[in-house]
Length: 349
Image 1 (cartoon, rainbow, N blue to C red):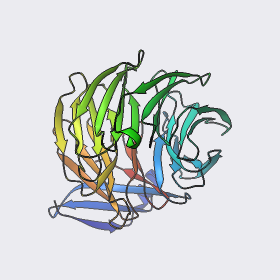
Image 2: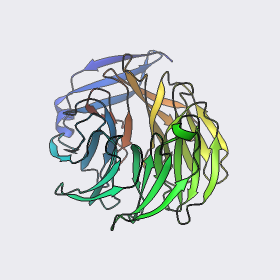
Image 3: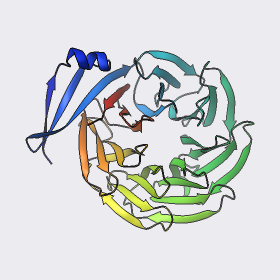
Image 4: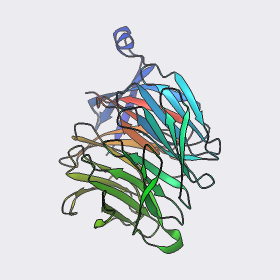
């Protein structure tokens, strides 16, 4: 699908409505169909932005870098101002998440660190260190009631660990992703009702696995990707699971969360798909891609969740798009790129 981009200055009214510096009018097949405002550019990280997350009230953005400076940065979502830098990990930070009440931030450390750190979101004070993984911690997620944290183990670990969010005690280890020493779990998420955990297998595992959150019993194995599964997400109503495939797959797949049946394959990405997320209303899916070394940049693509139709393609020339997240009101997408920048996009029609 061909597209071209027109760049123009914002009107005074638009600048007053929301701080911005330029806007793109996306043209599909020669006709302007959607207008997307690139609201702001948040700069400061060194290297790739591996993860981005909005606070539940939408006022704050957390971002993590996978370089060796081991930091999580907090930003004012409206003004783009850096609020705080959270330092404590030894090496890279692979994932970041807010608790449902917004009071706590969890961050996941890389191959050297191998810990989950909990932080006071208001003060930046480190609250607790969770130790137990034997490899990188590639993903972290809170249960909907905030009582439990799930973390995903990377190279040679290949497990999901569940933790008590208050005490930091390890509750359970979920084992099942295969492939020997190459086993990795790249992403983990709770269902909206908290009853189910979905995890994404990398290496030669290439599956999404569903687990009973209370017992740790494996419920189902979703097979279909032709390469590593790098990201997984539940729809807000819990009925659908979305997953993102790596190099030789390069697709987003939708699954029935109850039966495990593949519903749809979304093709169009030209590089590995790093991240996938549902909009708060469940109508739209965002996915972020890139070719790994960033020479061709990356894109954020928006899809109709019901039909699988591609709605929009947002081009990022500053490296692969490693992470995408919707704001709680669904109006804004945050994306993290390969050159240390968080981009904010206004996707209102």
